[in-house]
Image (tube, rainbow, N blue to C red; front, side, top):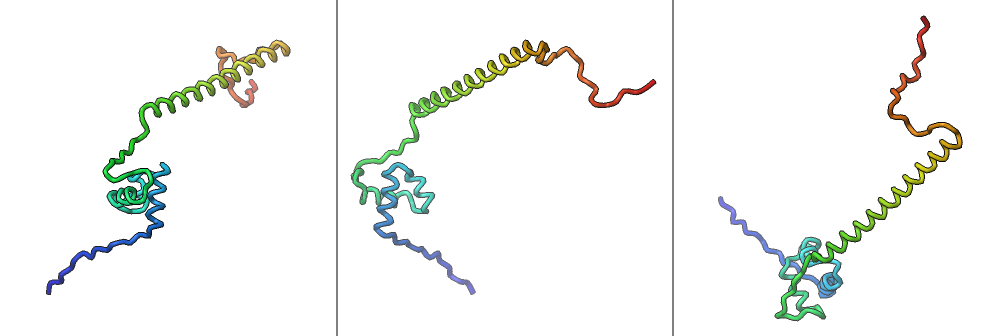
Length: 132
């Protein structure tokens, strides 16, 4: 015996308040249509229908184009990042110069060369010496 199985299509009903909330999230710029689609599991055309129906800014017959951040914004962000990194490098260089000067002053006061001498061989550690 063969069973006739059909997919039952379930339709969802959304309240007007929910639809307006989705449209307001889109209009505020917090989420794109694609993000809302993924977040709430609502199809792309459905969200656009709600935008045309409930939005104050979008009119039917006009195409909504969502642009990713433009190249000028990316360049501006990268320039700000470069300035921040240059500032950090400058601060580190000032700190290095300060510490080197402190080592020189301490060496002059103590009459000892505090800087590491690269020509000396490494010590054997704390191993005691053998008696002959």
